[in-house]
Length: 112
Image (cartoon, rainbow, N blue to C red; front, side, top):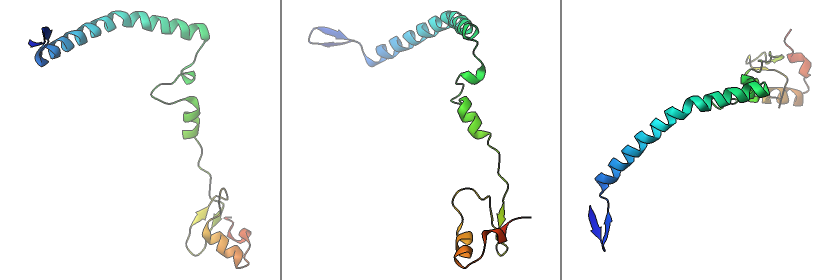
């Protein structure tokens, strides 16, 4: 121990030992309380008739899962020169805009 103006201050090594001791005690208490906490959670789930999709697990919510499961939209238009395709949704690609500016109809690029 280091003495500073009459007060005893623990050394770094002693503080590390105290931290380790407290961490062990905290883990023991956590283990003792864990079963009770799980039982309480299960009671709440049953009482409110919750489903897994109602809860967040690993950061995913029902909305995030729905976004991930969006279907791929089939291409509706194809550029005959480059083979590039476009679904017809969102901003039209340059090749469509240039063709329309040149007087071509968008329908001339429809995929049959």
